[in-house]
Length: 68
Image (cartoon, rainbow, N blue to C red; front, side, top):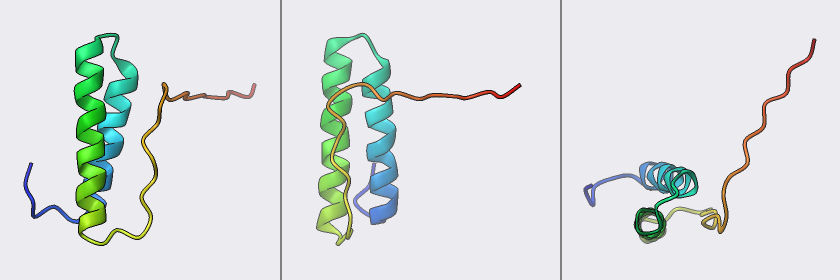
């Protein structure tokens, strides 16, 4: 983790930590991933990112549709 990451890199890392937080059953690990996501969003904002999506409060629902 470096301070030289671009805003886009920081936002991607924030999304990764959001996914990890929603995927774990371990409370302390979830808290750590949520904190990391918030930190990367803060860094992106500090570097001038124009649109920073908020952290998800709950699990991410991913759906796959099949036709046939």
